[in-house]
Picture 1 (cartoon, rainbow, N blue to C red):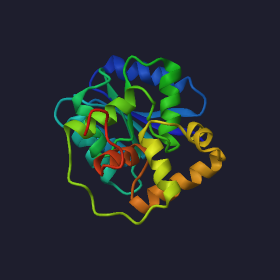
Picture 2 (tube, one colour; picture 1 turned 180 degrees about the vertical axis):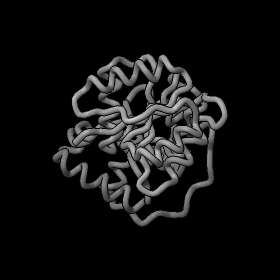
Picture 3 (cartoon, rainbow, N blue to C red; picture 1 turned 60 degrees about the vertical axis):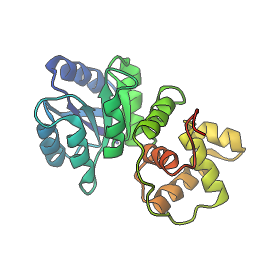
Amino acid sequence: MTIRVLIADDQAMVREGFSVLLNAQPGIEVVGEASDGRQAVDRAARLRPDVVLMDVRMPGLDGLDATRRITAADGAPKVLILTTFDLDEYVYTALRAGASGFLLKTASAQVLADAVRVIAAGEAMLAPTVTRRLIAEFARLRPVEPPAPPAALTARETEILTLIAGGLSNAEIAGRLVIAEQTVKTHIGRILTKLGLRDRTQAAVFAYNTGLVRPEGWS
């Protein structure tokens, strides 16, 4: 199944470069481009891509507001934030707005393609290095009121949610808990359903915001 991608960036060279790289990848098709947030919202609604690559800083409607509007729609595509810095403060707000992860603009063609596939599959960008630090910093710098208590998670689901927030992949979680990877996927599906979340990134943010996982340095 082909993954349909919309690229939103105010720099034409960036859009064209990503388009060339992604169109050269099997199973990925760039279906449109947008030069600002307002175009991104309009074209996401019209073209119905699976993934939107979203720059943060754009004229007019920026990538944060565009992400919020796009992810609020029914059947919304996944949004992958494009950023120049691995700890760009704007990314914290983007995650809260509904983005499924982020990618550095310096990423290689293979990393870019892999990121699109991961986001499209609902795995989200939760690498155990940069993204774990990002989520932790997001929770530390931008605390929010805890959401209403969710439907009760089982002990195993709570354990897996904690590992997701720690940046572990499905395979790593399966290895840590000595269970099948498919079992991990089943548990994650139940966690997302019970908490009313869309993907793993939202699950990780939820774990930090509710205190289930606390960033290093917190008492």
